Image (cartoon, rainbow, N blue to C red; front, side):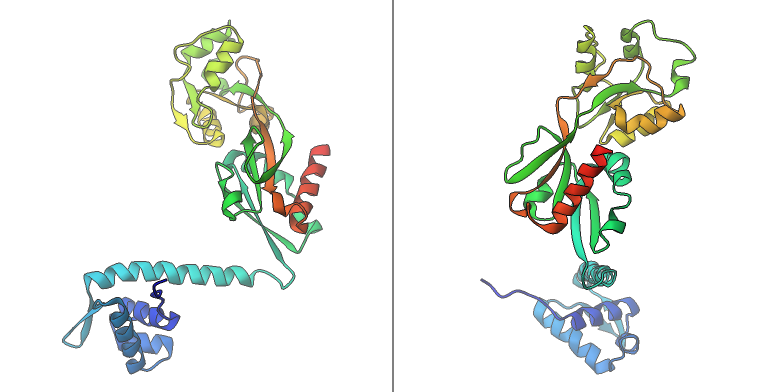
Amino acid sequence: MSKRLVPSMTALQCFEAAARHLSFTRAAEELHLTQSAVSKQVAQLEDMLRHHLFLRIRRRLQLTPAGSLYLAEVNKILTQVDMSSRYVLTYGEQTEILKVATQPSFGVRWLIPHLKGFGKRHPNIHLDIRNEMEPFALLQGSADVVFFYGQGTWPGATCLELFREDVVPVCAPELLAGRTLADAAELAELVLLQSTSRPEAWHEWFLELGLHSVSAYHGPRFDTFYMALSAAQAGCGVALVPKYLAAKELAEGSLVIPWDHAMRSAGAHYLAYAEHAAEVPKVRALMAWINEQLSV
């Protein structure tokens, strides 16, 4: 294997400070080093990279094109190191990090509310939650537990079914202008908000009612149900969404169901973890918590 080009952190800090101030002297003052030490670190960095990073013009520094390019990369590195270091500062010696991946709308509308109290019961487990459209993170090792919607099969993973869902059309009350639809076909005359993850949803919903609508695939398309719900609330059209996601707005009256037909989704929501992680305490703790929430 070829030798890695890994400059020291001191060299990167000296270069970044010198580039920011365009002065070895001011960089040295900031880093509490001598001017010659900063200059030497930068010179060694230039030797390693085989490029001049600065032009020395009349006792002033100017970044070369290579220096400007490298500065952008070094800034990313130093920022990441700073963030990672501050991240570790937030944990005690007994803290375990449980990395959780979830689909965006599910995470906002179901998972986060159902995690209330988990930290109090398990103070030594720190949840690290991020959005993930598919459970690839589990196989890549960047997540310990993944929540996803689908058929419940994923290579190398154990998938536990949480619940199934019913999909209903929702819209802002003013979109109906105070009228009641005579039949479901009248929905097709309105703007149908589409979901990228379920492009067949409107077509299947109409088919269940014995209808065929040429506009079932037409309309603005959104990456997440949360965005589609926001568009529906804004009066942009009718969204076809899992009913549990719209429960709050339906209860408040900011959204209504224009035609009361609920379609059972083909898939279900699952909690998944790697097969080898079945006995990991932090994973088992979250599984037990979620099962408890579902039984309430």
